Image 1 (tube, one colour):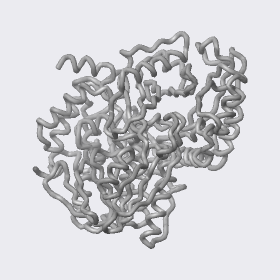
Image 2 (image 1 turned 180 degrees about the vertical axis):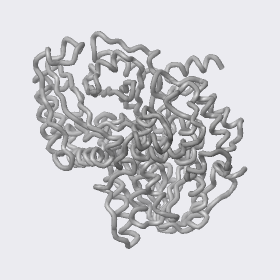
Image 3 (image 1 turned 30 degrees about the horizontal axis):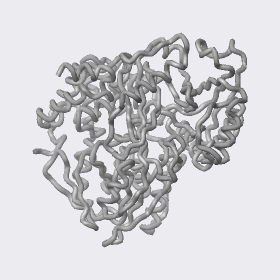
Image 4 (image 1 turned 135 degrees about the vertical axis):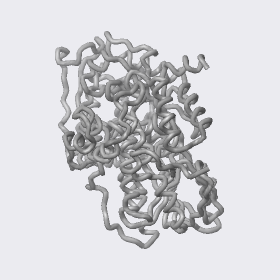
Length: 572
């Protein structure tokens, strides 16, 4: 079979750098990269970016898609981790608050401040148990009190005073100032600020593009098979017949919940990761969306555990569950998890009910928490650690990025890159701490409209999705197939083609779950999935039977179809 994306018919390709083609071409010469990064999630891609900017030859490999694991199943919050103060994870919270502020400052096109509302049933009750948890005398959950939260917020905000500080918190005790419809038991409302990430996958793909733009000494491939013989990798593209041999000086294992299995394949026996699966529901409930008024709500689920709900586009996101699993491939969202989240959201406002039929999609991912000394998944440490092992025969260094949270990806990548630079005898020449992300450049809708010969409304949509990178999308759309996607008028066919080529989308799921936000809105339609599949077939020349199988899989996948996935399964 011909290498994917090597066809050249249609206008759009004239304006698109085919990411996969470039990386495949580069691999032919990159037989001895200094670093191989395994895993294309947020930590792996951020590490590739840091290394590439500092002149290190490196290759990133992922057996699935980029940002396909826990990186695409977050709460879409850039936050400091308020609740981790109870576990005395001060270093993590301080680092997270600083990194949150940096994201708002340097990725403002995708990360913006968001007000978080905390309804409280208790003024003092629960303070004693919070102190006990803080002192490490108990791990038992308990109700959140205003007294404990006031102290926590004061400390929390002190960690975020540097670099783009957010407004201070406030407390309301008068019910007339509470959001309408809160439960009668609510006695106080606290308000504070964190960050909201409108498109986490988009930010990852921006970093990937920046890394690859540094030159031919950097490559990144999704959907590959690899094997390791103790000193070298043999890499096989899933969509082609060619294979490549890579003999690196350092391996960085950023494979998330697969870390221990990957280390085993490398010849290192480790037991670093505790897999905890988390699910979110995406809801189409206009009354709930209006009531939230652009704010997030962080509240007790009724059993002493905190959940968060926030607006995402025209939808509302509610999460998260915490279910331990030893299987990094576990993507099931159980009925118990769905019931729990529905019960939690229906406990927020007394006059708004959310029904199962309003679930338009779900997200699920496995957080690779550091394995500790037991305790519940809720109380498990969220901090990260960089572990180093050696391959037995070749003494090849293997650095494993264990644990951490989404917001700290840049700092964690910096730590891993610094270790790799030290092992290679190189010095850092560029810091990413105050570096703007590619889409953060100043750009206005009128410019986008002119470039792509688009309406101002269409240009505004592209600007919200891509920031300054909307220039590239608009250029690709000019004089091209700008017909709207079937059943999804917020996207054009030309934009989907651009995503296939410029962001290496290879499968129907890649496009639906990680290159677009088609799973948001009022629910994805069969005709939209089929139109996406047809575009993919035309642009890649893949086997129609394989693409058809992906369509059928998508129609029964709750991550894509939400509650209607069950009906699609019954109709097959």
